Image (cartoon, rainbow, N blue to C red; front, side, top):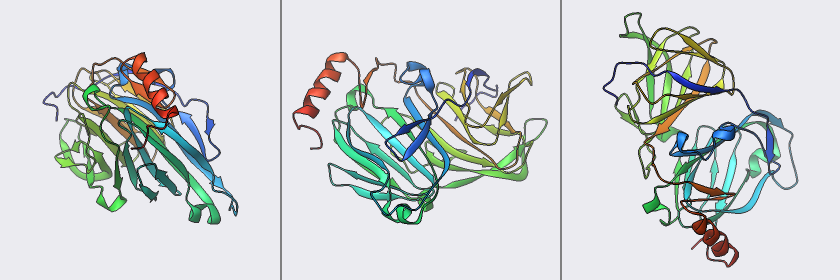
Length: 308
């Protein structure tokens, strides 16, 4: 973790963006908006968040997205409520249940589909999930497709301690962090990554508590408010408010991110990674380094060379 004691400051805050449908099962906010697919967020590329929404019981075909290709990056799907059923062209089939994470490496090419699970469709209920795209380094873009099913019970949970007025860690537990990728206070997440990535799912139970999240100095860092609202505290004590479904892009200078929730039971996703510093060519479901590689990806898909 960072050796710097200085606090990171906010570079930019984006409010919740308008929602759109992905297929007929995922009504999402495109969280990164016009920042998606920019080096500013590297290695992260894109982030769709589907806030809690009730779906009626459905005796017909499950809602979702049919078969579609990907190449050159990874998708991370987190289920908070409801269930997502995944199937792909290399034989993986799984149901992502509440708390579970699916980490899929598209690599050289995969075709997959994502639907509400049959069981959830029949029962109906609240549905909440998100999907993140993480870029692959140039040397790994044509790696073999891979699938990591990470169930909730395999994700380590670390207690969050409140930070005192003099910057020390108190004994009071005010929440917890699920460490999905990277490490938090020495606890490593289960996800295997191709470049250094941090992904933490944090819940803070106490309104007004001050929490420090140490973060590597040279990593891009992003804070998304899934539920509630927060203030991000700067080095000089200045506060930057981030509302529900808003996102803060942090400056790279400094170490810890200091967060103070304005509501009880606030949930945030803290993410980031070491920038790849490589060209990004993105079109639809393909993310490569050059437009020639994008054209080849499209041609390979159209000629049946994906999913092998």
